[in-house]
Amino acid sequence: MEKRRELIKGFMDTIPLGISCSIYGLVYGVLGAKAGLSVMAVGAMSAFIFAGSSQIAVVQMIAQGGAAPFSVILTVLIMNLRHTLMSASLSSSLKKTPRRMKMLNAYFLTDESYAVTYAHFQKHEPSSMYFLGSGLNIYVFWGLAGVLGYFSGNVIPPALNPVFDFAFAAAFIGMLVPTVKDMPVLLSVLVSAVVSLLGSLYFPGKLYIIFAGITGSLAGYFASSMKKVEKEASQECKEVIEGE
Amino acid sequence: MNNEIILIIAGSAFVTYLTRFPFMLISGKKELPAKLVRFMSFIAPAVLTSLIIPCIFIRDNQLDFSLSNPYILAAVATVITAYFSKNMLASIIVGMGCVGLLTLL
Image (cartoon, rainbow over all chains, first blue to last red):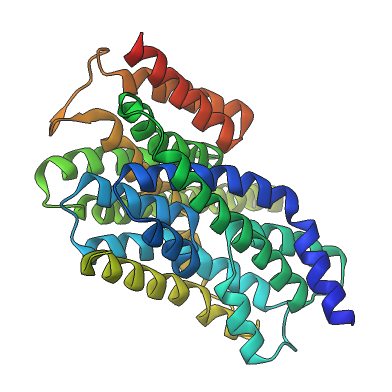
């Protein structure tokens, strides 16, 4: 009984995020229809991949054509590496949870269910059922919205295609901008911008995404290392001066 | 669905799950190396940038920095909206609205 209550609570607490996800899911479905995918493909991606930004990237790469399956899959892998951080962060709260339940929890891990569950665990007894309920909420809202969007996508006139092509970029901009909080992230973005432009002109297929992703991340990493060294150095100076 | 799409979906599903479960099973006994965590924090911004920038500036396989490219103004408006609203949906609506106004009028 206790378990079921936690499951329902997780589901209910995630409804606001489920709704915002489903609006984004509508856009995903429309884009899938515009890219010429079948409704089966659009639904199967939500059921099996279940990662919003990756699914949109996959649709975009299919729509533009010329992307080898290997480079699409590699792009998805790189985009989802952030999930390793989230799952590591939640697993420390779920020490007593059986292995099987954790495997199930992992399948339903998203940015949204992570955010809701992490916040809940700060104030309440951590429960894997709560986490599962939260994940299931996003799964249902996201899946249904994608299929619904697909059918509305088919009735949108082709004259509006440039508008929907831009929806990809706009969605990604909406995700990117709030993450740019300091100089190292900004540098990472600038390096990735230059490399991706040059790469898309001179590299075959979609390889530029991987090149830009790695060089951009390295640039940010080294910039943040330098910042750290600077901080430590100034700290040492201070200590020396105070010591005297 | 053709075979290529099935391969893409199956492969993407596999690698996505691969990013989700291994660290879930490590029950907080081992922490990830701090340097790796710091490197990984830059992956999302860098990859998102590489998905956005060519989409805006490459038209017909060529760089297009001119103002006749409607995506540039629309992108500026989207960035401003995202910065102040921190809301993805608002950003999408403003961005799409701008492209609509610039191309259809």
